[in-house]
Length: 112
Image (cartoon, rainbow, N blue to C red):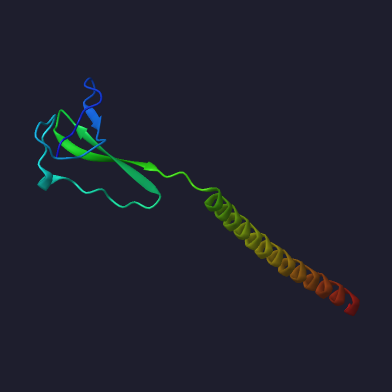
C-alpha cells in the first residue's frame, strides 16, 4: 500500500488513496492493516501517523436526515403523550379516593 501525504508538516496524514505501484511515498505492510469498526450512525476516515508509522481510523457522526429527525421528534411526542395520560390517570385515581374519603366523613357525621 502507498500513502501519499498532502501536508508534510503534520504527523497525522489523512489517507486519500491506497494503491500499489513502483515508486512509493510511504510503504505499509497490508497484512497489519487495521479494519474499521462498523459503528451505527458513524462514518470513518483512514489516517496514517508518521511518527508511529501506524494506520488508524477516526469516526465522525453521520448527520441525520430530515426524516430521521422527524421520527425522533414523533417518538418523543408519543412518549410525552403517554406520560401525560399516565399522570392524568393517577390524578383521577387520587381524586376518586379523596371523594370517597370525603363521602365517608360526611356519612359518618350524619350518623352521629
